[in-house]
Image (cartoon, rainbow over all chains, first blue to last red; front, side, top):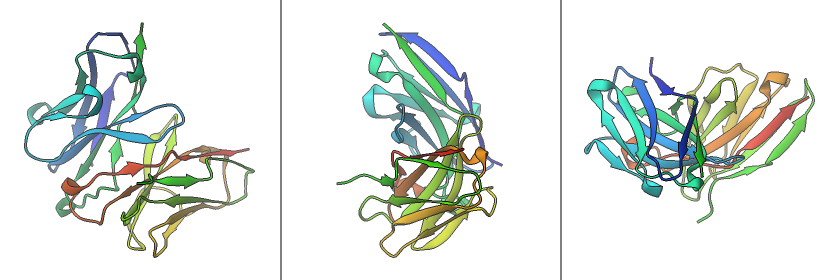
Length: 118
Length: 116
């Protein structure tokens, strides 16, 4: 079975500091990996995704993530935190339809709430 | 281009009642998925519809059902509501059911269901 683990349900950083949100996955087939952000009372917005190709993926709002197969990780980083980054972040996994995956069937981690201190 | 629209945004129902939630996908999107979000269980996949057919189903009881219409709009129904059904229900739409590499899921703002 496939699963996603996000280490740390809450992360607090100072404005201007590095943001590092951790995500590890478990999968028996090549994964497709996603990071979503959710602001209060809102839906999910895609930050970035890895499917195939380059393992360092750049997303919106200055975020990036690196797929490391040997570590089964897909950590999200941003060099300098901004107050507007305060939100909840979700890592998710899916798979190629060849393996039974589907764009609409995402397995999510429990989420990490990011707080940014002035 | 309009995003994914979910109605209503907020809903309060009594235990034992049933409820229907609606989702209008982005124009041109044929795949619609539903998720339940709760503080305890997080985001859980309910089901996915493509071209009016249920393509995938999560691990939820039969009280949870859905359907998709020819215009790709989708509805989700929960019968015999329980207190534990209180949650944010999110709908996501995507392009025609091709490979995941070619598309992504776009989420609506959700329907907040409270069962009392």
